[in-house]
Image (tube, rainbow, N blue to C red):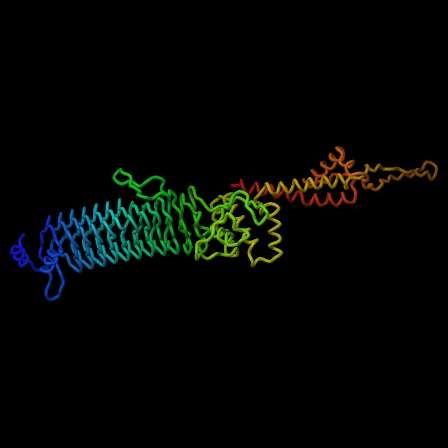
Length: 545
């Protein structure tokens, strides 16, 4: 179109006119002239009726800032090589951006879509900004590729919304977004962070995403929700769950139309929850989730948390470690990451424990003991008492190290830990029982058994015709003497072993003993059954239903 024809055409336009520019190649100058012809000279507002820009090509920037589309706006198959700005635009009819290519930045900030908004299979080469956008009706981002990520902060989705097969090559930000009637988000792929922080979901929703991270800080669900994720590290800090919310790891890639979604550069197969701090866990169900780095402290109703499937928690360091010059072996058990941080902060216990991130508050044992206690109760209420044993061990460990526990009680707990691992380590109790029995046998052989078994002596007295008085006297046991190696005989060993075995089952041997042997037997009859009982208790705690 030459200049005279263009001027004649533009002169026929007025605000609110329908325009048809399908396949038109636009320069910045041509688009500016077109919008100027559709601008009201009094109000300064640019208004279009039905606008057809299908297959149009915008060689420069496409700036529609503050424009109002009274009719349908069709940009299907358009190509915009420069930046596209639709800031504060009002679409009263349908807005069709199907198959559009945006080569530069795209901005729909504070735009309003009164009708449906369709971005099906659109490609956005740089960051796309939809901050504060209001979608009053349907919004479809099916198959959209956001090459520079997207920002939907403060957006309002009032109608049905689809992000099926959407790809975010960067961050996808939905900070403070409102999903009023959205039933499904995804499946989508995000190479960086899917940020749903402070978003509000007003209806039952299913969120399916493969992402590097999913942030749900202070997110609010006012209905049921199911999050089916892959690869993601999930942060639920201070999230509000008014109804049951489940988070599950999906084992296979998501599919749409029978084809698997490409997961781009996502490599870590685990779904990890990194924080439950501030969450009311009464409505939370976690399935097949890695909780190795999860911060549980500050969780409300942690005793009602449900863990299903294959879940993983942090574990104590394995193998032999050194504490100064002394070798140390930590008891194998599941732990909280907060305990890792606390032990790593102590120079004496730091080897093998995970240090806290920079700036992370390190909680003391007095604050961690209730966390272990609530997790233990959660497992016990779920009839998984063997699984609760590690949390009981952790609770007792934190009590033993807590500063608010009296010294006498900590000493008692230390003895309980040394002898049997708080009634949970049968091997430790049996080892002490073996040591105690061996020591008792040696004491009996060396000092406890008399030199020889005293033989009763009967003495009779004839006092008159046909009257005899007889008294039987047993001499006191004689302490053994002579070289020690002579006392370590097979006969004395057999007698000592029989005595010790009787002591284990709280029976008296009936053996004549020296004073040392008598007190040793009393100690054995008191201590050895206790150690045997602790071993039985430990085994019971590991196998009971």
